[in-house]
Length: 249
Length: 251
Image 1 (spheres, one colour):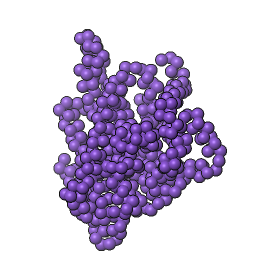
Image 2: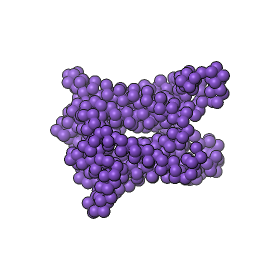
Image 3: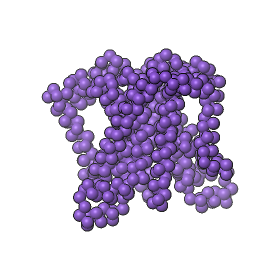
């Protein structure tokens, strides 16, 4: 176990194992099914050198940022409003859990009919994926709050906005970060899924056209890029969350 | 409790009634969103005609296979990983960032490897479901008090029997959380895969209706998927509550 404690060794070992696994799948399934790690990275570097690929990266990035902002702010708003009262949170929580279990891809036609093909549809699809986990974790964080804190706020005659700003938000922060971490991942998936069906640009669009063209190098390049981005941000959020929890003990 | 239940019904019924009114008044274009009552009537007609029964059964069969695979493989893998600290250290970052991976990107690979059909769809559902079960199993096994494991050692139970008789039953409430997620993920994975590329199933039928602007089929089928997902989720939730109440545990 000692060697695993050296910083960076464990993730590097995991990445090495995954690359070996990828190579093994390539050797059994063949180049028609999947591109090899070496050819994928060569292709990815070549793509990142040209302007065309970046157009799609920016398109996804822009839609993702809008969707993430809506998911986090909307989820916090729903969660804090419902979390302030026991009745509201008991009413909302099972509904949100049920909404979370819905295959949201089935809603795609509805989103497309309402927003049409383009940026708003991508943003909407990303946001409906991410908003629910943020709201669920925020509600739970509020409910786990020691009642004495809220009572103190009432004794001090804080307004609802002050109660949210100086009691609820700070004490619920670790759980909210968990929700944001899950919301981040789901919003990214949602945005890319949205691009797969209803867009003319973006990494999801690129993925879908490469599936049609059987361009395995492009499929794997986009996948690697998305996984690397998602994994780095997710790991950073996880580290932040652990630090927040440690401070509180 | 019944007051809360009433609020829940109202929280769903009032928006539905507003949409119904807006559709009837013509504020919402029928091509965009038909009235909820029309969707329900359409769904009843489709179910009565039986023409979607094949697609419904097909999808449920694949979802069931993905779910069963997720639970069996997930619990077994979780139990093994729990006993191997090095493997756990290595896999932990993968488990915690897994749901950031766009699994559907692997769908074309599975299609080339296994052909278009049930197996790639099931694999997508399995890939999504299994990790939730592994994570829940690890959480559950972590919660087992050491005294139970020691007692098992005193009785000279092997690792297999310790897991089956002592630790996994103790971890059951945590496992149930994973199982609930696995159901949802199996639905999401399979229907998503059918939606992207397939020749049968509910996801395919919705896509087909969408491409042909056939709202009379599309909206009732979307409603069906929502209803099934919510009903399954509510049933498991009620079962979970009953199990926990019987145990009297707060965990």
